[in-house]
Length: 150
Image (tube, rainbow, N blue to C red; front, side):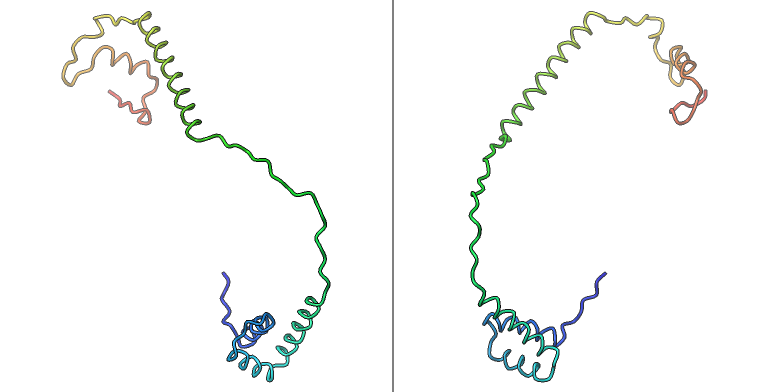
């Protein structure tokens, strides 16, 4: 975690030097900056270096940018969301409708009849023959599978 460093007088003075070079420092801050620069040789050197650098940059000749063909991006036409959503709904409804019809056709042609002996009425609290057969064929009894030993 970074610990914020409180601004010191030197930090404020160096920021003020930059603002003065841009011509945006007010009179009161200029007086404060001059007082600090009189008593701080490091900030005085910084101010002198910054002034020289700014002067060199201002006196340098302007160089034109090389002429290059302009970059024109190809316009891409995105797929509109309402069209994509409508297409998805149509696809899903067609698929589910056809599967529903296939299921009804197959279900009607191969109906499984349950013999009446297994469908005897359930006795309260008792097990039916089908329940016992199911428990025997289920493999080892375990609590993980939700089966309870009888």
